[in-house]
Amino acid sequence: MSQLEPGSKYLTFSLDLD
Image (cartoon, rainbow, N blue to C red; front, top):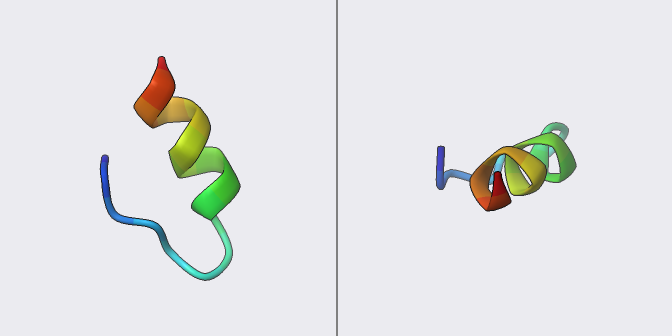
């Protein structure tokens, strides 16, 4: 998941790092 959505960008960011 490299797409940052305007509501889950924080969650996506964490998943992207993990």
